[in-house]
Image (cartoon, rainbow, N blue to C red; front, side):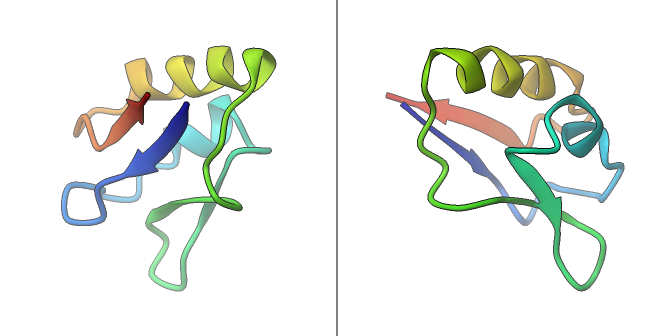
Length: 64
């Protein structure tokens, strides 16, 4: 599984970073980015789902 952020939807609230700082970071404009290649394991999948559920713009998706 892999997590991605839709850069056009992200407004930079930072909720993804607060939920999962090991998975998400910020770009130069303060918008959320996925760290690394976005590949998830069992532990990081739960954190990514938490971040996804807390994103007000629904900019985070988890792909199989």
